[in-house]
Image (cartoon, helix red, strand yellow):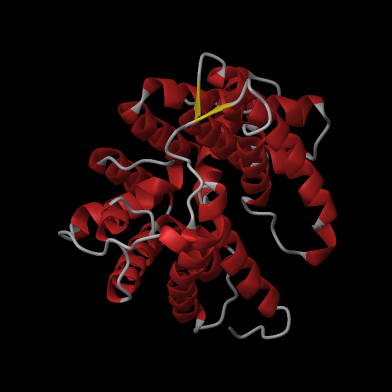
Length: 313
């Protein structure tokens, strides 16, 4: 028995809400595909049911806020209001402590929806996507607020450090497989092999070209950072890879031109993202803040803005 999808996905139905919710999850990695979003949610659930619940609820809230707020239906149905709240929910849940971290994570996700809408309005004339900038700024400010507001209990792992005493630890055994997979998994803060593999499978499900780009971006980041003497522990954890993965997807595929040089431009952008990652991380060390996806945003904005003048790159 065949059922008309137009009836199932009619706005306001439960099926429509779930579909858009999964798209909000997949849009974190620049993909509009409900099945991909579902696969990625399962990958996160394998790591942590609590974290997976935060991801799902954050995406649901973003969809509901968009609908009740009267946002453009196209923006809602593409999941474009969901990915910043999803990332904000994950980052806050993982880096805050105490019994209220669930509340702060979901509240932060709700505010991230409003911030995303505001940034879309402010940047509409530039024709440049807001990407994950709203989530980054919101998360940084909430982490900094923990130094003034007792209710926010920041994780001990986020400790300000003095750069004059900073020591690099480049030694160790390089694990190329884990580093490659984790570079993709870390887009969703995942550093477990099977979670990363499942996320990569979700990307290939949506489009094999995007999956190939993701693998290339992670490998290029690994090779570049390793060649420049980055800490092996960070490479194995994928912390130099996820920004490069997002950048090559954005510059080389999702927001690309039809020029034959675009794949090369995407690879160059992913290499540059590694350098920006090291710089941003060093800049934030004295504040105890994580880099998040700021290198991806800066590098992608650079190339997309440059294309306004140099359309062939």
